[in-house]
Length: 530
Image 1 (cartoon, rainbow, N blue to C red):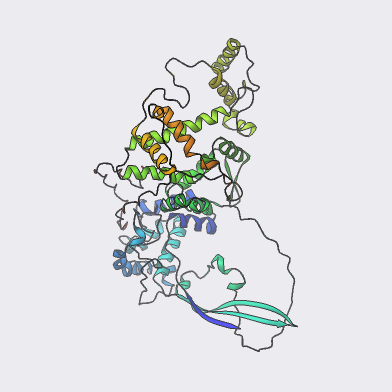
Image 2: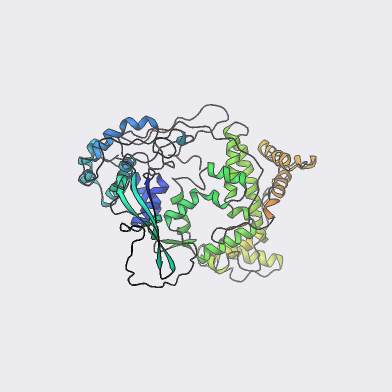
């Protein structure tokens, strides 16, 4: 038998993704609801009792240590919080394993979500104005803050081997010595303690003889990874770098904190649900038949469309704008060129002689809307002029009719063909991007290519996707597409941005826009960067 005394520090304070994950698991809330309730606690009329909720870091600046006694005193006026045994000598933890860590806030606009020091004294008056959901969320935030300044949880870890008629059986468990911060969560048990290792064992001695009662044999089997719920899906979006194999892209995507922002991830999921690509099954989120069809179409057209590594490529472009290496309009041009190439590939995959790419699954949705009478007359006219037969279903499906017209209808004078820019010279951003690829891959850009924007676009497309076609990548949940290797730009580290204390009694004021050349002002409240 082996017995060890161990200690465990409190969990980190909450940011928006962790709140959304917690509330999805505990209350079954959609991610959008958590954000909505948090926003009301932040800037609701007569409330304003928490700091800015759209945060994505779980640390506080060390300058807020001075506010700890006041916040604790304000919270303990409440009946439920007064029952928490907060010691007189508060525990202030600094550094990466603590709660107050200036370095952990580098590049962040807002710190972790905590009670507002400027209104905590008014909590007794504000509390009756809160809805039941608002009280639930504030309780989560307040208890996390109190736990952060309480002592460690101390326990005795026991590992025992029992001899049963010559067969060795193992038992593991723990005995609490001092609850510490665990007293702030009397009904909570972490997921990693719900197995055998977290069970409570009685006091045992070496050589002790015990009575075996009710032995059973259990049949068990391995299980596939669990389905996503809205909370774990947001966590996966935040940590999308884990699904990328290329080291450069992994690092850049990790630095960018994944796909989307705290303010947009819930909207992204909500948009996919409204369009019929995702559906809720109980607490879980699963793809629909339409969603799986769309994934297959996009993957076939260009793996980059379903590759989280592409987000890192776009972040590298933003880095160059940030340091003045590229103009913002030029970076947008480069992205648009790639987008036009992908749209061209999607159009090439459609056929006027059959159903649209997504087949019947999509026809039941947006494509199921009938075409207008004018569209049908135009399609009949084009078919007669060209001596071709319109596709089946064109009189009932707007998407089939539109696809037929896009493919066969005469173009208006002056119209440009899909994805082409004629003899237009390339932008500086295109040239810079192409030269970067050439340097990293040891290639030479032909002179005739440099003369045309369309030629430069085609050259970028062909060389950017070279390594994307090599081999298959390990997938997440067996559905992630082959990987892509972008220009191996190490991307400059993002300049640290001054974080705000978020302790004001009202909504955060808009950030002042930078006037330095080559720099784009960012503010997470506005979603400009998105």
